[in-house]
Length: 532
Image 1 (cartoon, rainbow, N blue to C red):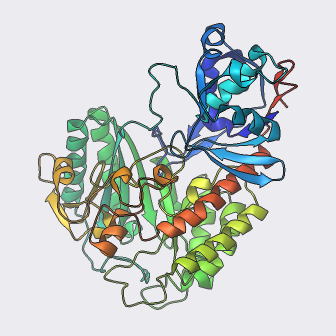
Image 2: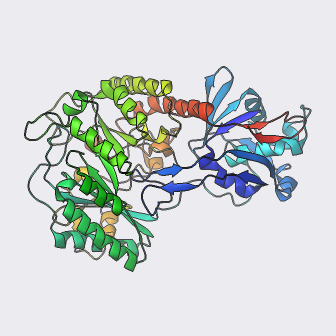
Image 3: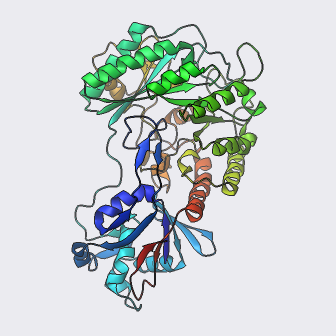
């Protein structure tokens, strides 16, 4: 019997409940510091590999009671075939763990469709309860089985965020004229006093609401046009965060066209994570992101910047805006990204006042599903070693269950160049309060008109969906602008439902290709749990 799963995500919890021996246990590191408990889109974990996992047996206390407990298969379990002899299994409504099991493991799980003790479940098998407990325990730990008699089972959903994030709109100016950009360009920028007051406001709210860290996103416009201001703001934020005993992390969003080696060194010194916008290779990028001056395409400069960042040891993340115009070029872009082992996100184009007249950006459901399916097929034929499933679906995150797509209205502030505070950067002109307020986050949380953050369980069309705690209901701004309501499923719902099974299948294939399975030799006659 064999089980494949991502050891990096699950070994920590499993080792706490097993009495055994771990060799070369994986060590987590982050590219931005300090690391959040759940990496955000701006901070990604980088993990060293471990070699073996051997001789895991459950502790005697566990042996004494679980064998007599009633166990049942999770009724929200999603199972789909990978091939003729392997099955993908996950529970998106609970912990979200993804695993691959063989036919023997699938057969064992089949004994627990109804509440059943382990003794009752194996009555027709030549097996020892003791020998099967390690297997059952892994299924319990992955939340594929539930122990109905265990008291005080904690919810798998992560607790409230420990980090308050803030978007600092450094400047309205930009050297590009991207066709989908929602910012009307001007020379307006955030003055030194405003940026310091913005940091003070973020820290006031963080302290008031008991956050332990803040994350600043420097953006625009093009933030690199005002890099001295970014650096001064960040240095001030670092000083203030230390004084208030808060962790500080930061990212800078850039079009990647004007980043010199000296600039890169300044960002690296401060551990500011860089996010580069890249929509394609060559003309596929240039057609969406031309220079404001009308000069030649910007791709060549972005490519040079990415190479410089990598050579400097500052690995950027890539943000891709997917539209009708560039979706056919996604396989070529993914080849570029995967070859360089870059973290990335795919964000679907969102119509706005500045782009509404450009008709070839908006996609249909069929166009997006077909285009993304082609891109996922490319990934299947070029599987990376590391997990990328969380990057593949617009606004989706499968690392942990969550009831909201993003932090708007809850754990997020957007501060424009004048010090006015909005809920969302894509709706930055609709301001709610200012940085002069004693607690700007309170004003954001209590504002009750327009776009609202709604629990996915309270959204019509979402509350029975298998994928709702990975999806979160989609972008709330897209839904509100399309329907005038906050309590409806996303207009992109059909796209998400079509793509989630394809995405989890890719993760299953990655596990089969690169993960070493846990092997139970002859589990129905003797126990011998090994890592081969």
